[in-house]
Amino acid sequence: MMFLNMMLVVLIMFMFGNMIFISQHKHLLIVLLSLEFIVLSVFMMMMLMLNFIENDMYMLMVFLLFSVCEGALGLSILVSMIRTHGNDYFQSFNLL
Image (cartoon, rainbow, N blue to C red; front, side, top):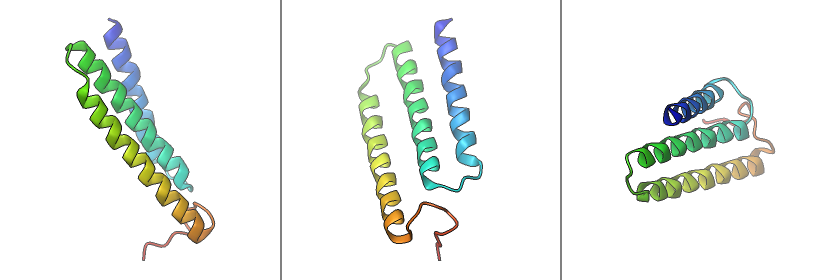
């Protein structure tokens, strides 16, 4: 019963992260934070599933490695955008 409650909490976390990511925001930092929240919820879901089937946790270390790389890439894009444009508004960032 506890496993189902924890899975429900993780699924609610995942849905809230997706709703924040999909909705219109002006700042890149909010989008990056919502992506990290989604990654955290997926990590918790993988941890619960692997613990439930009593499997080893090596895949979680690989997942954490990729999530840290994703976070560092997002921060580097944020810093370069702030240095070139002066802010992190999506309106001031022209893709063309």
